[in-house]
Amino acid sequence: QVQLVESGGGLVQAGASLTLSCAASGRTFSTFSNYAMGWFRQNPGKEREFVAVISRAAMSTGYADSVKGRFTISRDYAKKTVSLQMNSLKPEDTAVYYCAAGSWSLLVNNGADFWGQGTQVTVSS
Image (cartoon, rainbow, N blue to C red; front, side):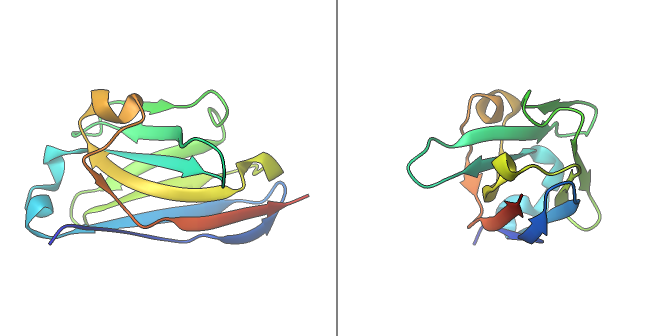
């Protein structure tokens, strides 16, 4: 069984910080470093939006222009987790955030091999 489980979402005020975490489990993720990991977000009626990606060896990261300089993606191989530190949150950051795993090229092109169930982030003005 393959699982990606997000946590850490919630309701915050504009300007606040929030950290999302995603735990990977299952036989597929027995070698966590086989996958680049990413975060995406989506609002009802809108297309899914790429947010951030981290390479298999954590040597490279990439961000959407809308979050660059405010969000930081990281991964912990011992815990098999990937985190998204979100600072200076804005109301337009409100969305369901999804963790995903796949190749770098797939993730930066808005795709993935595996998806989490999502966690809601709401930023009030």
